[in-house]
Image 1 (cartoon, rainbow, N blue to C red):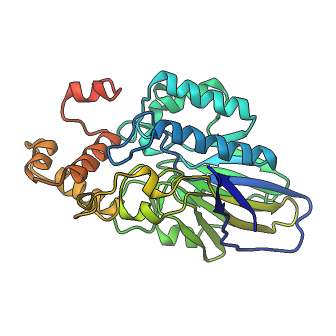
Image 2 (tube, rainbow, N blue to C red; image 1 turned 45 degrees about the vertical axis):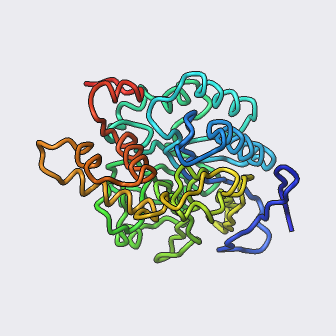
Image 3 (cartoon, rainbow, N blue to C red; image 1 turned 60 degrees about the horizontal axis):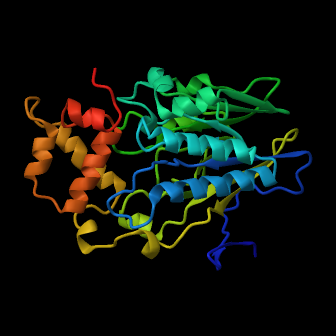
Length: 341
């Protein structure tokens, strides 16, 4: 069994294996990395240096990708907030450039303000793009395969195989068939009508085994980081998806490979109040949706403050509202690196 070690402690490499064929020749390897949420700021619930943890994990994945000459695609939400401290962004650029990894990325909702993807050049993700170390994913052609980005607002059905490239992979920063009214959500019928062999999804931090929907394998490895103290993160194992595919026949295999990490007990300040009333990211999202649906004249932060929530839950809600571009006032926005319009 393959193992990686962290501080002398072996970490298990596990896999959900799907579509495994006989020896793939000629082959190419692709890594799909779920929402990194890189940030120099340590969340309230963590006792480690979150910024250093982010850099260490990214460096680990980059080195793994280089060792296999793999293409690495990030699922979006590269940064936890649109604008990060310049020195931290520069450190990320140095890690990627030094590693020599071939990286492409999607843009996620955390990378921009108010879903305004046209303004990505004004963000920290824009700095990675402009630096040339991480271009936005558009289309990559390898043998008879085509790897395509599904952009926010784009009709999913508009992405189709071609005669020259009959095998299709699509990467999207989207939920799959969620009941929440999320702006970034692919419906089941859209995937059922898809002609993609592989569909890589970010946005959802939970890890799901690969699943097949009408001939399309949906791959959701979950977020690279565990930025919140939701109970699901205490037991979740950070991993990236590894895809090995034959460039001519269309055969492929998918496994999930563990990212070197510390146990939850070493990074979280685990308190009982941290889990009261909020057991998942979806619970926080639902609470925020209720706040936003309150009377238009009432500031959502006033509603939140009046709820008398445990401090950890209150902090999670505030962090989430900041992440999606909701601020208490102009000064609050400026403090978090967003210019008030």
